[in-house]
Length: 154
Image 1 (tube, rainbow, N blue to C red):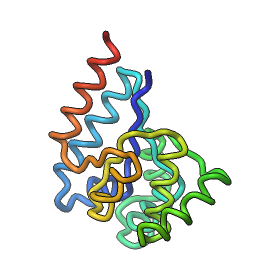
Image 2 (cartoon, rainbow, N blue to C red; image 1 turned 180 degrees about the horizontal axis):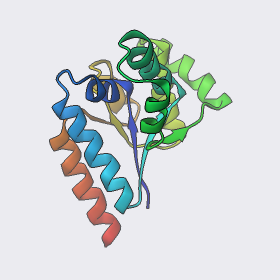
Image 3 (tube, rainbow, N blue to C red; image 1 turned 90 degrees about the vertical axis):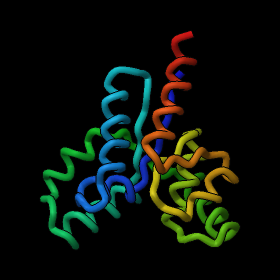
Image 4 (cartoon, rainbow, N blue to C red; image 1 turned 45 degrees about the vertical axis):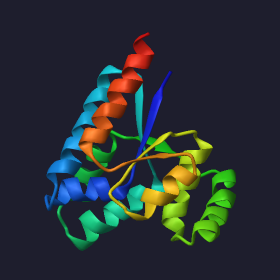
């Protein structure tokens, strides 16, 4: 069975900005390296990509658009369907969160992604209410991967 992770822009931006980046870089390295070896999907959606491009290409000018495209190609994509569009508005209103964050939650729910990897505190309480596991530490990710990968072996 495929293990699914969704990576929020906060993790990608922190890793590539090189500010307080060790945890973020470790998380991304573990996910993307494990993905090569196991039945693992590491997703982003258009909202995440837009935020990363905005921050790293246009605001900080840390990467060219081409360099960022190459990096982002390592991630699997989840597309925003009509169902996701309807659901994110409900989630935004219900939890009083910004639409981009609600869109991430709606995307994860629609595609049955269990794990949300993010440094955004907004998700800490809301993600579990929406059936997602909030991951903000490499140590927690390691424990989850060990458990999930052990399940897939047996």
